[in-house]
Image (cartoon, rainbow over all chains, first blue to last red; front, side):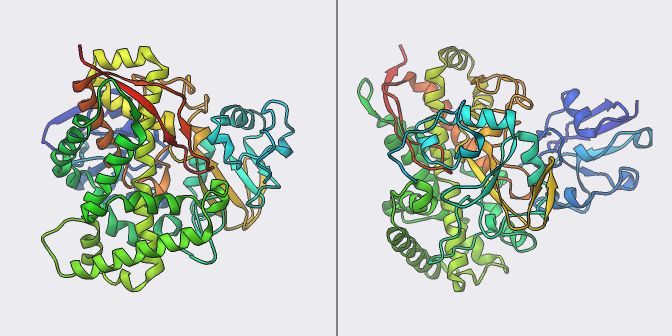
Length: 106
Length: 414
């Protein structure tokens, strides 16, 4: 059960005991973390589970594939560390990871 | 198409003879059993004959997500509606472009409807909504479509474009012309009328563009387009300029208008849901999402296959039209529980397909949701009930699922 911290835009921090094998998005939704909409339900098709991954965890959280990259492309607030949290699979390697949530999902 | 002929029986017509492009399906609110049958018997269905030529119908939620997630195989060019691009006025708009051109143009227009910008507009929207509602007659029958749905969405468009407020009625007129090519709408508009109207739209906006040039004190769409290097010379590419204007006008017009009317109708058809809403206005955001799903203001979007591709066991050929029926996917029981029912506190109200998915997903979705949320917040503070007095008159189209008239009567809070 890796511990993952999600920090809302207003600074409020939520540390969850995440379940391995499930996406970060699903873990956050299941544990009631606000700020992630996930309108498409995890299909990498809406862009509303956008997070910014802290530098130290960029490598271990994997790389966006072409579809995710295209979906991030329609976010005006995209940064180099932008990811869709439905595409990050939780594993022990992510224990301690910190991600920040954007001001709005859209 | 022979419009004197009655619609065939949905349950017995051979699938080969079923025409889901017939604009009367939406006009007569008869579409449900046709699409229910396709979802069950032939969810990826080839229709060999239609007034628009042959096309594939994709009718299940998951299959539409798959098509929208593969823009390399399913292109948005040359157009995203079932009909062909009118040869006499070939509009170019980013909803009907692929990457990379699509991405560049979308980026230029997006900031005006981004949530950060919308937050600053909320007070203005609320005051305009309040003014509109305060002018309505209580206890008299009137047309909600005209007095509220069209009025509010038109004001919003005028605000987004900083369009001359006293001429704002032109915006929905142009939207109607653009959204209803003669064949799709069943012949209500001639091609000549459409072209004349849209050329007027181009002239008016070209004038506005030049008048506004150099202004920096405004955060409207025209100014944003002028300030982005990629679109700073858009006015010199008239069909692209007009195409993108039309896209933004249609995108912010029919859709929200018909969701405003649809919400009133849905609550009247489901009085226990209306009771829930009155008892708990905190349900408004969820009710707004449910309304957008239930209404599905745009019935379809189209892609065109860029290559021969096997899809769900069917062989789609390069160049084939692939029509994604949102109106069907939003009733797909495999994805949405109790999909035909209007339930304002359902578990995942945002999980609907009305905004589309993938890179062409609706850009104005947050604006639409905000307009509807504010409207219902203000309605609940003023009226006990917006009562529907007669069956609505629906639009004849296979694209816009909407209402021409909806007669209502307002009941004051007791």
